[in-house]
Amino acid sequence: MEPLPARAAAVGAARLGSVAFLVGGGTLSTEISASRLLAPYFGASTFVWANIIGLTLAYLALGYWLGGRLADRRPEARVLGAVLLVAAAALAATPFAARPALHWALHGLDALSVGSVVGSFFAALALFAIPVTALGAAAPFLVRLALGDVSEAGRVAGRLYALSTAGSLVGTFLSALVTIPWIGTQRTIVGTAAFVAVGAALLLPRPCLLVPVAFAAVLAVPPAGIKSAIYQTESAYQYIRVVADGNGGRELELNEGVVTHSVWRPGTVLTGRYWDLFLMLPPLLQRPPRSMLVIGNAGGTMGRAYGRFYPDVSIDGVELDPKLNEVAGRYFGAGDNPRMRLIAADGRPYLERTSRRYDLIVVDAYRQPYVPFYLATSEFFRLVVRHLRPGGAVALNVAATPHDKRLSDAIGTTLLTVFPQAWRWRALRFNDLLLAFRAPVAHAELERRAAKVGGKLRLLLPLFRRRLEAVPATGAPLTDDRAPVEWLTDRMILDQIERGGSTSEPALPTAPR
Image 1: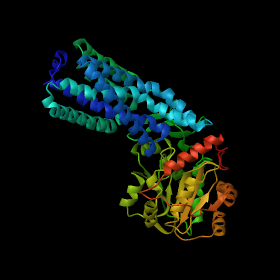
Image 2 (image 1 turned 90 degrees about the vertical axis):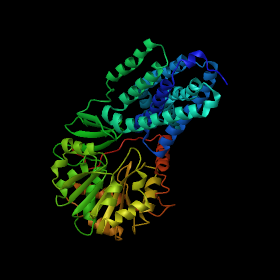
Image 3 (image 1 turned 120 degrees about the vertical axis):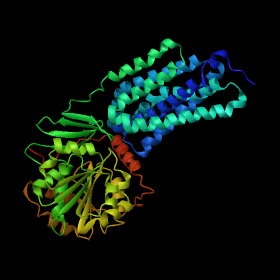
Image 4 (image 1 turned 135 degrees about the vertical axis):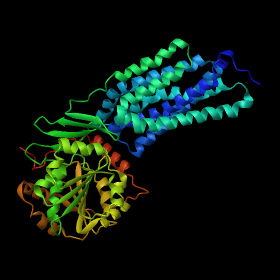
């Protein structure tokens, strides 16, 4: 038998089990918070998650190796306590160090080399290298401290890993479902650091019990404001901010404000941006539409405009985040259109459950900069066509660049697996409007129908005639099993960066003056 050193034997099994639980919870809470911290800048695609999970595992593996070596050399509780203090301190500093690093990463998207983007992405993820590596070192160290007899190795290791996994479960659900929506990402990370510090204090001399209190005091530091806002909050899904546009209007920004998701202008429903393009749809149908579904309603900019130009159309505005429905009514005039109904739901599950049918179905659901893959597949479009009335149409807002049509080509090809035709209107440099009708219609007929549009929307007619084109079938369609929209989007962005082109978007002729 191998006797345990006296200093290690002084630490009780219950105390070591508590530390294992806290470390497990801290590790998974950190991973969840990392995804939330990075999502506004890099999105939440499978690529981003793969990098977060992969690098977290790499840091843990390094921690296991270093922790095992250190535990054999210095099997002392106070040494592990010091390692956990380092983890807690690094973790508490992360949200404050992250903001300038992530802003630098975000500005890398405007650089001229791909390397700056890739490098900044991994530099941002490297913010978590020290705390996660230190947390990983705790696992072998705890086993070494708890092991009094090698004949008990299996039982001791199993108990500690079970407690660590239980902590991981609590850390995952507590951070994702409670603390991030309740107190925000920054305070969740700092609170996690405080709990890791509690684990450190359990292994250190009694005066160190005050250390977690010091970490908890950092919770009082308010999150840094990105810009002055009329309203801001963090929902269960994202950070929401309503800002003034400087001309008496309002704009809706989500997360880091890379793009504007809705606008409100006093005295007009027109914006001069891509939302106005959807106002060309009703005349393109065989008969005036009676109902419309908007998936990705955000602040309801489109529905408000329909209330002015097409007041007879009833609109179901579906938005994943219930908080955005409140914001739409309070700040973006959703109530100006009495025929718009706000629904809190994910777009595709909503279509699966509802029996309603529509003349128009519009998809404008971005999680910047990606279109959710499950809203761009053959299976989704088969679901869409079942909910379209005869003569109905579907329209999608798809990200684009002036020189890259791969994403809209892929989605257009996918539309052709369900619809007889797919049309692309390239009215803007960075937005394609894709159209598909239940029944085939000739290009000349679409132009004839479009000419019926009235008012200021007639200013869009030259753009429609000049830039409407049929989308040919190109490559394989997107499916629920394989839909590499993130890959296509990333290639499109990187190509634009390499070209060094401007990212500014000229206003449509409908822009308020």
